[in-house]
Image (cartoon, rainbow, N blue to C red; front, side):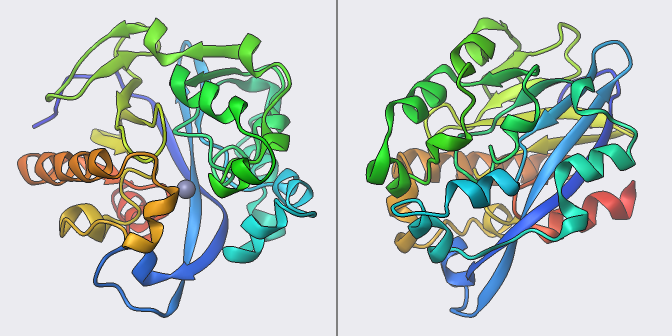
Length: 279
Ligand SMILES: [Zn+2]
């Protein structure tokens, strides 16, 4: 049973680089071995409202922005790889999408692995939680790096192009606070607080399946299925730890109550495989 009826959109879940980190960082009870955390980007097409991206993954800009200290610390803590074939502009071109066709980018949050490609879309509107954008814009230097914010990745005109999610009509669903981005309920931005200020997910229906992109509200599928929060080592990068835990519990409950709903964390290969297995 669907959470709510929605007009269909087309959806691609694109892998755009990865970092390596210990499994135990993402999930309590995980092992210490290093595993890959790919960054996935959603590309969604609406017949009347065109293309929307959900996050942008890594990019050449990410490497340029982390060449020097203190930003280099970010890249050296979680080493990043971006194969040529995974660059987002290349993958969009393969789907016949010109960068200028991207009308809006929904930013789950402003960590460097999610906003690496904002600079490649200078005309797109940027949909984000107002508090998330202000928080990112307020940080500089080492303080920014410690929060995994890379100011060089933020467009100079971010404030002008920002459509705060709170400015859209409320369309709450299944106990979650949500906003109707296109006016027909096809793209519902969902409040998933805790990881960073203004952290957002996106709910839509594609190919008869309802999908909830959850950004970093859960790092892996196992995190929400088994209710395993990130390690306390990762607590430092979480904006609000108790709220991170309650959001994860809400996703766990939502998954249990709606077996047909596909919940996709931003960094989970298992989720990526689950989407393409049924697509
Ligand atoms: Zn992330």
